[in-house]
Amino acid sequence: FHNTIIEGVVNAGGVKSLDQAGGVVTGIAHVTNARLPSNNTRSTSATGYYFPYSHRPNLKVTLHSTVTKILWKSIPRVTSGQAIAGGVEYVDASGVTKTANATNVVLSGGTWGTPPILERSGVGNATLLSSLGIQSVVDLPGVGENLNEQTLVAMQWQLNSSLPRPGAPFLLNVEPLETTLGAGNLAELESLLNATPEGLSTPLWDLHKRLYEKSAPWIEGYIYLASPADGPSTLTWYPVNLHPLSRGSV
Image (cartoon, rainbow, N blue to C red):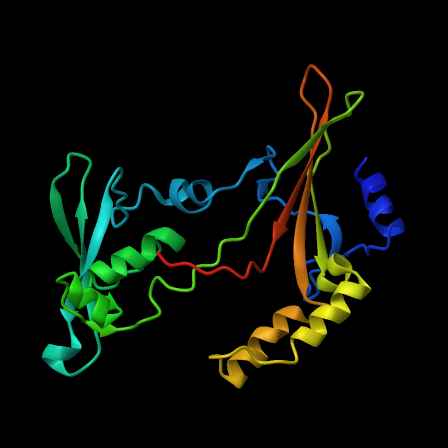
């Protein structure tokens, strides 16, 4: 069934990708899955990095706890050197605030979690932090800014009959801007790009325009076939806008 979809995309003017991780992402291909080949179960950070080493005495995982800020061993306004982390402050499952000392601190709170931790720790826009009563450690205005949220819309169709469940349920079709817009709209866009917007520097605009090259990946479409044990199969398409123009902050 997947081969039929791939053939349909190619017949409609699309291309088949042999390796979307090979430098050219455009085209349709099967999505790779992180699965254990021994039992076909999903491989996760827990199965890959925690369970095999959970017995080690120097490994401790604290559950249901939230890091609030970084504790500094050295800060520039005091030592005239670099800001060096020496641990973290966190709130445990019972709501008690605690601290943990460390030689190295790896901050990986994700898109939504990392900026607030940095800002509460004094890393961010110094003017903003000062207005909130936070002492600036590193003046870094870009923290929490330029948030880019890729929009997604799911469309689902119920098939007339059930199909056998495929080994790799996902297909991914990445369309370039040229295919997404069509020749006429692309020509109009290219004419608009000749004028630099007011208030934007030429180097920054030249960099931004690279998003609008006709071969640039623009729409990412996931195609998912679900085949339940009983009842008809469903086909779901998830088109994703890779380059929304709106920007926000965290």
